[in-house]
Length: 372
Ligand SMILES: Cc1ncc(COP(=O)(O)O)c(C=O)c1O
Image 1 (cartoon, helix red, strand yellow):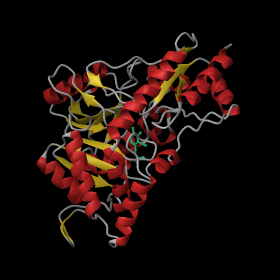
Image 2 (image 1 turned 180 degrees about the vertical axis):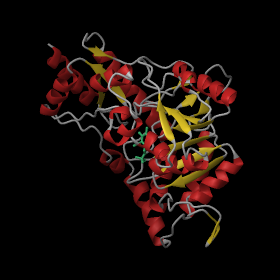
Image 3 (image 1 turned 90 degrees about the vertical axis):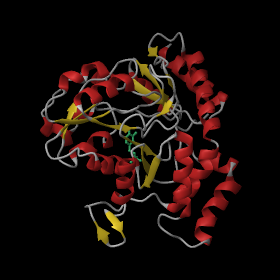
Image 4 (image 1 turned 30 degrees about the vertical axis):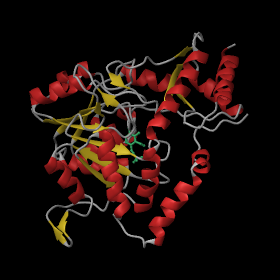
């Protein structure tokens, strides 16, 4: 049995008529940049997440770059973040000559260890970029408390966390991305809400920041050919927005199915000593964008899965403080031992709403066979 790490074709085939009609509508009515479908999708995301302002941009990476620029993460300012993430969470800080300051992660959640943030705050610190990885959000109560006491801006890298909601010690669940000052989503195809190419979004509850996001995505123009800022050309594509609006209608069902799949894995993998399953989150609503295990002899297991035609992914094989592009920051091996160890053991298994129980069964049987 071949099990893909991810496939979009099953979902497409299930909802072919809707996707086809959404895409053809855009083309038939005349292609336009920032067309009606973009505005409609932004409104739908505002409704779903509770964000007051949403601006569609070309990718999650661009969303981070624009938001960092708007929040003033530049010119020697320091920004505290985690080294265990995708490049874009940190390159957005470095792009404008701000200095990424790493702190290690929590071994249970893989998110930034909020207890280690405050000791890295200096008089140059401008902000914090927490990343909500895989299935749960970083400890936003602690992060927001530090930010308020030190007057720091918080940019949530919510690229992976569409649907996740934070409660903490509060009364209500607040969608990821709008707990801090600004947040970003990625609509990369594999994401919980993914399009058929690239797409991203900036969300905020701050009117001024929301306005700036829409100005920065069109070259910094407040009016056509009138530029108040040095901005970007970064718009969510109209066809992708049409696809995303179809998918957003079914997002709660997709999230529920991901949870069912995660439970299949948890039931079948428990008891394998060499495999550790990450703990569930408390005080927040989890979404299984990625299902990870921590595996002994991870690379050998990965090879065995490959031989058995099972897709997997390793998020992330090398922490950012050890990447060549950040060598100028002067970090070395051993600086963030938990992030480094996690990079050696972590392995993501296939999870998407359309995966079948038989396929999950086969993945788990194969893992058991490997460790026998
Ligand atoms: C944590 C994180 N940040 C940023 C990004 C960048 O998003 P995109 O691929 O849409 O540029 C991604 C996704 O790939 C991500 O997982």
